[in-house]
Image (cartoon, rainbow, N blue to C red; front, side, top):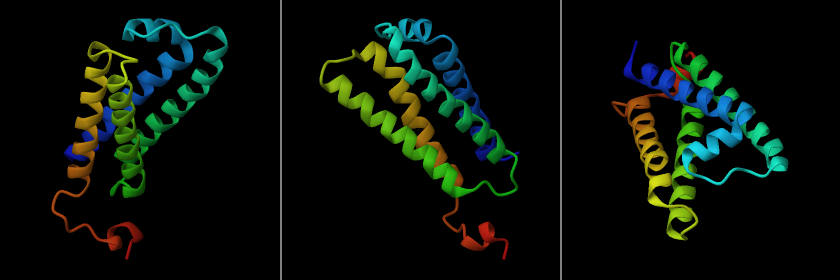
Length: 134
C-alpha cells in the first residue's frame, strides 16, 4: 500500500469521526472542542454537515482502494482543507476563537493538504493517460 493510500485511509477515518460527532453528538463535540454549544435549531444544519463528512470519509476509503486514486477527488479534499485553514485563520484573527481552539484543526488542515498534494503527485510525472486508461 502506498503512502498516499495510507493517507487516504487516515483522512477517511478523520472525516467519519467528524461526521459521527457532528451528526450524533454535536453539543458534546462543540463543547469538547472549546466552542459554545450550538442552539438546538442549529443542530439540523450540523446534521447535514455530518452527512457530508460521512460521505467524504467513505469516498476517501473508496479512493484508497483504487489502483490509481482519482486526482479530482484528492484535489477536492485539498480544497476543503485549505478552506478549513482559511476559516480558522479568519476567526482566529478576528478574535472569535482562541489559539487553543484553532491550533490543532489548523495544523491538521495544513499537514493533510500538503501531504495530499505532495503524495498524490510525488514525481511530477502523472499523466492523464493513467486516469483515462489509455
